[in-house]
Length: 236
Image 1 (cartoon, rainbow, N blue to C red):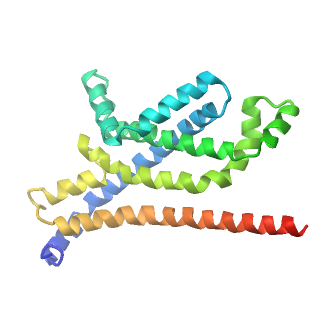
Image 2 (image 1 turned 135 degrees about the vertical axis):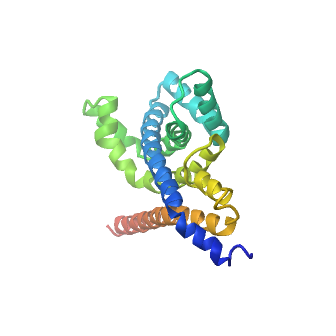
Image 3 (image 1 turned 180 degrees about the horizontal axis):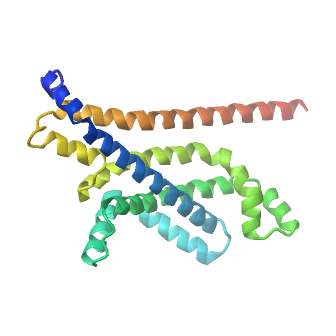
């Protein structure tokens, strides 16, 4: 505990605060691009999983099962070293974006699939009777209705993605955890373990906690709204 109360250690953290700010920026940047990729993959494979056709459903199922049942750390290492040894290295942060996007995309696909399947079948039949093609039916009618269903679990996946950026440490990343480790083991900054990791943890907390609270509040709001709707329907 002596390191926690060491004024000198905290002074080092303040002096080298740019290290933590750079790590935070790299973590946020990696997360934002990975989230975009995950959403795109989630929509594509979520639609494939609910298409009703055997081949797209099988492809989506294989992708989801393989990605969800292997560690993100393994996927990140495989992608980074496979590209490096093939002579097509794209850099640590882009590798992290792709690896995290693919990994979270599998979970997003399940979120979109469950959201689509929660829509009453009558909505699909009504759209089909009006001559909507599959993509039009999803874009104009089904997906807009799924937003209120998928938003809470989707935000939870975003929070998990942000925390999973710490996996970039294994491939020498420039994320918040990697730069924190470099700080606490550096020649001029070494030894400030407790303050360094506390500051790093606070940075993650300040990003993830508001998102988690938003997801919980939104879910509670939807439940209250559904209860009011059910009561109104019964009274009518």
